[in-house]
Length: 336
Image (cartoon, rainbow, N blue to C red):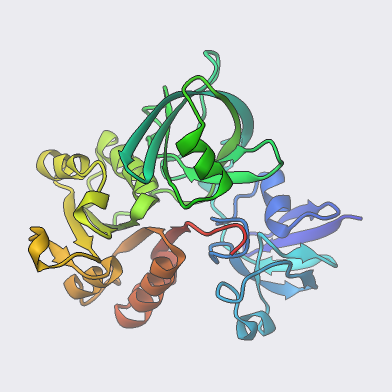
């Protein structure tokens, strides 16, 4: 049984097939809604059910508190229509002409950037190129039917190889990459996915917030902005535990020297004897320390869910940032 979904305020209409979520139905019919993790954890796809009923699926309490659910809020990556629906949501028109594809690829190179971060470069078949926006991700399709989402670290103009940054958290895929994967292995992936990319119709200055391997999509966005000669001021706040965790650190340093990107690395661990003379503390708090008013900015944040949640809460409540100007990609586990 199908259910009609009316997207407001645009008035666009799509139809959910049996078992489809609101997000899946919208994407299949060419309407891009904001989303990130697609597993009910990050809250990027949150909207409101104005009419009708949904099954909220496995939406996590942090992303969809009970009080918000009672007021009609829903995570559209999890919400499945039980009736025809009218929903309130933001639509992103710029993505409609980029198809999501399933493609084979070959592991071109494996490079350890730190003991627990691997740079993976993938080569597509000679006749293929992946169209995407800087900041999006792909899902590696594993043989057991599961997926591993990884953000692309290369910008669209540099698409000969797909670059991924993987931290080894000890999961099955990470363990395989760090212990068994080798060059020339064949993989399959689906992409591009996600709505984390630079909104180029704005002239607001941009603050980019990267934690850990959240540097990957931020790298792609900055390199895209440099290539396209974007004139908006760009400031990168990059968080890491120690200086050794600031992998590829010479790259943002070169952006600062050659292109005027303001670069502020922040360490959360270490001590006075480690030789570090830069900023210390939590990276999202460094932004609070430097800016009394964020109402004129756009924020692009990528990293751990705790960092994303704290940044959005504090910037919106303490620094007058509009929620509509906060874009995030939270690296959330599929089974927290």
